[in-house]
Length: 237
Image (tube, rainbow, N blue to C red; front, side, top):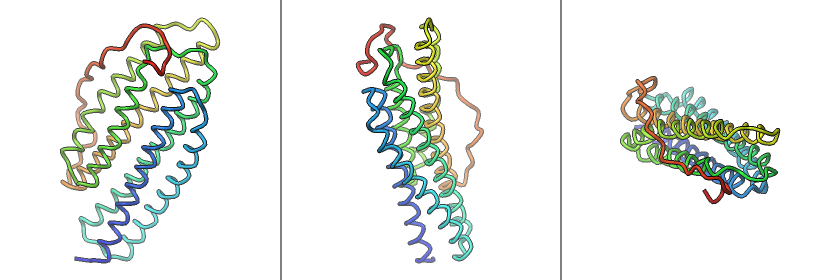
């Protein structure tokens, strides 16, 4: 037992959870930008991105320092390696939240968003995946981590449905082309957040079990829940 190492490892863990909490706040704010077509939250999103970036550097530097100086045993080395990987995944989630917020600013000037897009549902799934992956890390709960992986196909299916509906809707004007592009990019960013949350869950399983579940055989995509085909305001979908 190395009490000093354990103390520093716990500090790393809480730094990761702090990063994840900030990323979750960013995601909620980014989705609010789109729902309200109000760019005001973007300033807070960018501020939080800087904080997440700084925390990622702290995690990487501390992981390197502990590896070099604390003479960790094999399981501790695994934790340090996973901590750096998870910090990277959370930082990428924060980047995607910035992208969503910026696309939301562009969409703020669009007259009407189609109700056929169930982006709020995608946002909820992505938020749940992120929160569950962090809870799995805190509790070292592989069952919870596996539940995150089970959600990956669902968010992929929603992305496909959103993009399919955008294409079916037609693009008769320059504004409609731009709107379609921005909304497709939002759907893609949400799907990528789900991917990064799944990567964190995979890292939890490796940390706890020593089992690498990356590159597993993908399951068939489940059907997304039905999406209302009538048009209307996005925030009332």
